Amino acid sequence: MKEFFEFFSFADANVRFVTLGSVLLAGSSAVVGCFTLLRKRALVGDAVAHAVLPGVCLAFILSGTKNPLILLIGAFITGWLSLIIIDFITAKSRIKEDTAIGLVLSVFFGIGILLLTSIQHSGNAAQSGLDKFLFGNAASLVGEDLIIFSIVAVLLLTATVVFYKELKLLCFDEVYAKTIGFPVRGLELLLTTLTVLAVVVGIQAVGVVLMAAMLITPAAAARFWTDKLGVMLVLAAVIGAISGVSGAFVSYTAPAMPTGPWIVLIVSLIATFSFAFAPNKGWIARIVRQRLNKKRILEENLLKLLYQLSENKQDFHTPRPMHELLDKRSFPVKEAASGLAKLKSQGYLEKIKDGWVLTAEGITRGRRVVRLHRLWELYLTQYLHLASDHVHEDAETIEHIITPELEKRLLVELNFPILDPHSSKIP
Picture 1 (cartoon, rainbow, N blue to C red):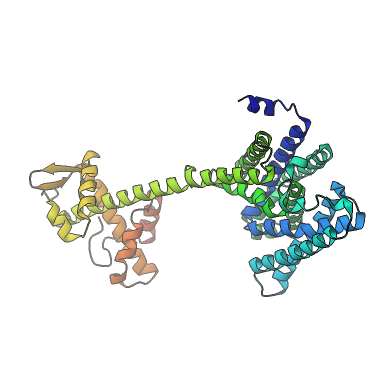
Picture 2 (cartoon, one colour; picture 1 turned 90 degrees about the vertical axis):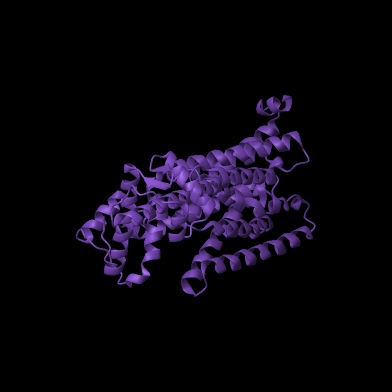
C-alpha cells in the first residue's frame, strides 16, 4: 500500500515521465485503433509496427545521433511508405490485402534487422540502446520524450475530433461517403497517417513487436461493451490509459519488470475480461442467451404441439399425457418435463390427473406460434417457390423469432390467407 501511494504521489521524476508517457501512448493509440479495427484493417497496425524499424535505423545512420525526434521522423516515413505499398500491391495485382501485409511486414522488418545488425557492428558508440526499439524500453523515457508524446497525442486526438463524422462514415458506409462527395481517398490517407503516428510514437515504449497490440487490443475490448462509436472511443482510451498506469506501477514496484510488455499484458487481460463478461456480446452472455432461446423454443414447440392436437375438434380441455406428446414429437424426456413444468409456472398449462391442458393464455400463445409457422411456410412456397414438403424445417427455425411487426407484414404480403401450403387452416 505504501508503494501504491508513493507511486501516485509522483515523487520520482522518472516515474512521472514513464507514467504520463505510457498513458499518452496507450490512450491516443487506442483511439486511432478504433477506426483501424472498424475498417477491418487490424493487421495494418502490425505491418506498420514492423516497418518502422528500417526508418529508425536509416535515420540514425544519416544523422549519427539518437535524437528521438529524428528517429521518429524516419520511423514515420517508412511506416507510411509501408501502407502505401500495401495499398498499391492490393490495387494493382491479384494479391489479397492480408498477403500484401505479410509480404510488406516481413520485407521491411528483415531490412530493419539487417540495418540494425550493421549498425551494431559499425563501432559507433552512439548506437548503444538502439535495439530497444525492437522490444521497447518505457523506463528510459525522459522529459524530451514526454513532450514529443504529448504533441503527437494532441495531434491524434484533435484530428479525431475534427474529422469524427467523416471518419465515422468512412468506417461504416464508404460507398455512401463516396456518393455524397466525401473525399474518401483523402480520408483514407488521413487515417493512414494517424495510424502511422500512433505506432511510431509508441515504439520507444513497447517496441515494434508489441505495438500492434497497443493499437488494436483496447479497441477490441471496447467494442464488446458498446455499439456507439463515441462511447467506444472513450472506453478504448480509458482502457489504454489504465493499462499504461498499471504497467508503469508494476515496473515501479518491481524494477526488473519491463514496462512495455506489462502494459500489453494488462490490456490483454482487460480485453479477455471484456470478451468473457461484456453484457451483450461477451461469451458468458452469449451462452446464457443461447440457453434461454433454446428453452423458449422448446416451450413454444410444446405449446404448438398441444394446440395442434386439439385444434381440429377444438377440444382444448382434453388432457394430453406425456407419452402422447413424446409419440407425436421426439422431445428429450427430461427437457420436455422441465419445459412443461416451466409453462405451468408461467400460467400457460395446467396439470391434471390425466395429463396437461392449455389455459386460456396457453391457447392464445400456442395459436400464435402455429399461425407464424403456417404463414412462413406459405411465404416460402409463394415467394421463394420452394416445394411444400421442403418448408417445414425452415418454418420451424424462424417461427420463434418473428416479431409482431413482421407478422403483420407477412399477413399483408400474403393477402390475409386462410390456408397454408398443406391446406391446414391458419388460425
